[in-house]
Image (cartoon, rainbow, N blue to C red; front, side, top):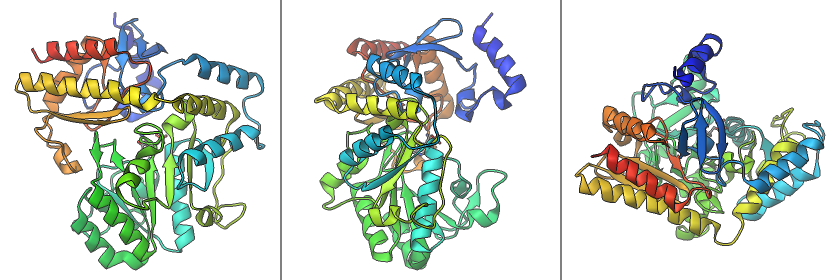
Length: 428
Ligand code: PMP
C-alpha cells in the first residue's frame, strides 16, 4: 500500500484538499502528493521511505539544505530559553542589524511571520505614507494572499482589476491595477493616467511565481524613474530572491546596472527565517517612521520577532555570509541549468532555462519568456510528464510549471549529475 496515498486520504477528511497550502496537493501535475517524513541536507524522504533530491527547499528558505548542524544547534539553544515572550529581545536587534548591513536600501526593518504579512504591511505603509490608495502589481507576480493582491487584470490595459479569489470584494480589487511584466509602454500609460493617485508599485525583481522571469534592466530603470517622478513608493518583493540570488538580493544586481537604484521598501521572507516562520519589511527611515507605535499606520504580531525563528534566521545568515558561498552555490545551479539545456538540445526538445545564485527556472519553450502570458503557453501535459518521470527517479522539482526551483549549499555536484542522468532518462 502506498503510504503517501493513505496519508493523503486521511488528510483529505480533515484538511481541505488534504493540504495546508494549495500547490502541495499536486492538482496541476496530478498524482499523489509525497508526505515528507524527514529531511537531511539536499534530500527528503517520503512516507514510503523513498528518497528525493529536493529542488524546492520549502519553496526557498532552505538555502543551507536541511538540518545544517550550526542552525540546528542555534535553534536548540533558543528553544531551551523559551518559545515566545511577547516582549522584545536582543536577537531581534541582531537580525535587524544583519539585514540592514546586507541591504543598504533598508534603514529600518520590522519582523513579521510570513511573506503575506510582510507584503500586506508594506502596502498599507505605502498607502499611509503617501495618503493615496491605488497600487500597481504585475501579472504573474505573487506577493501573498492579502485581499488587494488577489487580483487579475481588468478589461483594458489601464483599467483596475478583478478579484481572482472568491471572497475578495470588487471594491478592494478596484484599487489594484494589474499590468503585464516587462512592458514599459503599459507602465508609462498607467502612470500617465493614474500617477497622481498611485501609492505604490510592488514587483518581484526576478519573478519566481511565474517560474523564473527577470525584470529587464530598462523596465526596472523606468519603473524607478516613474515612481520617483510621481511620488509613488517602489516596493521590491524579495521574499524569494532576498539572500537567494545574491547576498544583497536582486536589488544588488540591478544597482550594478542602474546607477543609484534602490527601492523605497523591500519585502523579505523565506531565507531570512531559515525554514522558520519569519519575514520582514523595511526601507526608508522616513517611511518606516509612519509605523505604529511612532506613526499612524497600524501593524502588529503576537509571534513577530519570535526568539526561536530569529535564532534560526541569524544562524542561516551567518553561514551565507561566508566568503565564496554564492560563487559555489551559483556554480552548482549553473551546472544543473546548463546540463539540462545541453540534454534538451541533444534530444531536440524546445527548452530554455535561466538561473541566478541558488534559484533557477526551466521552460519547455524555445526562448525565455518575458511575461506571464508567454509562460502559460507552455505545454502543460509535457511538463507534467517530465515532472513525474523525474519524481519516479527520486528528483523532486516544483509540482507546477509556473514555479521556480532552488539549489542549496547541501546539493553536491554528484546530486546535480544524478539529476541530469535522470533527465536524460526521462527524455529518452
Ligand atoms: N512574495 C513572494 C515573492 C513569494 O514567493 C511568496 C510565497 N511564495 C510570498 C510573497 C508570500 O509568502 P508566504 O507564503 O510566506 O506568506
